[in-house]
Image 1: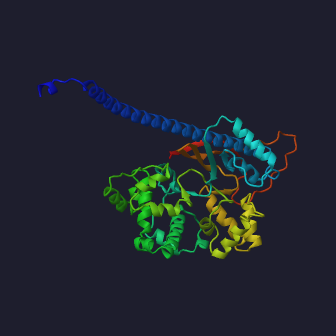
Image 2: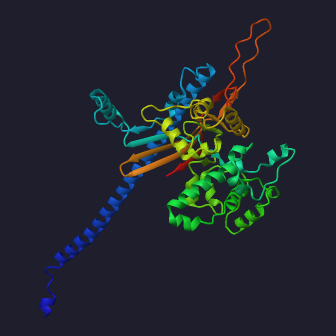
Length: 434
């Protein structure tokens, strides 16, 4: 037994095997950490590349809007509006861009070869998708707010009727001599909610007894200047509604549509209903080629569903689309062609909107840019709201004494300015990262 116990043969082998097992465990852990680190580095690289692609796409879109601005200003300054149609100018900014450039089946061989050559020689690694949307067809909700500076400039202010919103629903729009965003919001939202109720029973159960006045008062209180509680008798109830939430009113104009979620009573479904009709951005011109059916109902009362359907079929005909370059074109369609409203009434209603600073045209100045960069499995998206501010140029100076006056310009249609409008540099007023 002592001989057996004192036998040292095989000890080295056991030590070697134990060392090998320990080293294999260390190697496995090191290999796993190396793979994770390499995967992390790859993901960071892909995300950085996707971010750079998205930023490049955004800069490309901004550059195209600058080209649109230069072209528009040149047309306006040289009085070439009749020569260069507005739809041609709009294509400078609104045509989407994709990389790699897609080729459709049946395209010319020379075009495909050119695209393939460009892709091979390009140093761009990844994919890029850039779209520019014209959103100059929405009313600015900030027009609802009560501004103390404006109040100070007014000699008297009308008191708000507690039944203002219900009255707006029943009042004949054709008899209105003034326009308010309050009424437009109520009428539009009520119509959208009623249509949704008919199609969705769950929505009807949840919003069957919706109180529009409370919704709009809370929204108005949130953005109105501090100290305007005495301007609306319902602001007391709105203040109590905010006290029940951890949020406080902003007491200033909204700068992002996401702020509406901070207002009591407003949720995802209600905001989604009006997101294509209203915005919070400072555009006061409605693009006639993007005007919505709900806005047309407010502009020209008593239009039926068939009237609206015929209008959009006429305007958006895929074979022969019609472009409304001015409010005069819209007037010609509804007054002369369809005879849905008289000439005098149409002019009066356009002037009613113009008094509130809302004009109609075909040259947009508010855009939504969506730039998406893709690198392997990483996607980076930038959503920017861009405005091209407008500046009215002073009318031409009178000729010196002794020189014949120039031919006076023709009187513009109702809703159009007699001044020369110039666009300024594009400005990003909101940027979201997804």
